[in-house]
Length: 301
Image (spheres, rainbow, N blue to C red):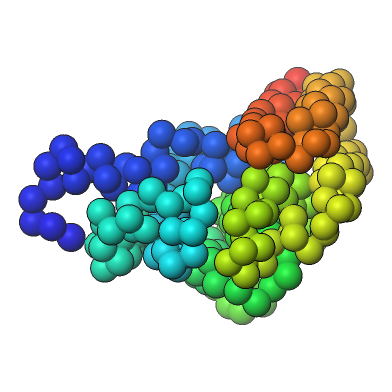
């Protein structure tokens, strides 16, 4: 990292971590906070809320650094990504990795304030984050790998709330079946919005040989996206039905379904701008579901 961090250099770093495009970390944040409320059966306290909000922003930012380094030779051939700092040479590979490492260490410092079980699971979360950028070379639907990475805040939330015995069995048992099922449900939401994202770059990705769900699904992409939304919302309704969250959660599910239908209108013609708009607006769907869950627990008392 340069010894002098003037305003110009800091601006490059902010561009590197997509600071002016918060949709990415919001997509991570809402399911993590929802899981935090479910694990705590209501308000989790200021400490855990702070850890998960700041940790989400930091890890998403670190992930951007890793992704841009891994994709730098591909991104130069894609119009939307050709001007990213690493791709155009404004930030070196070493510099980007150093920025990412500093951000990841800051996130790890936050996890250290929770419990040892959560710390143990944080290494698994980091491993998935490191694997995803390279999955696009070999996996026909790398969005599934991203789904695990973007959903790992869910088991982390259960680990942070519940803790457990410091043993292999205790670390595993800290995450109940509900935590893994919620991760699986959220994976389908990630498949939905990241397929919309992949539809934006489909032509470029075909030309450079990148593997994406939009390419794999072909003419069935729009139907698949809507199916992913349906599986996510229906499974979430089923999984949280025992919590008796009442009308707030039911209303949030209905509003989320309406948003999914709006996304169908946006992506049905496969126009780049509309597909990108659908992707960017997905964080509102996550925020809607979180609001329903949080309010449901609050009113349940």
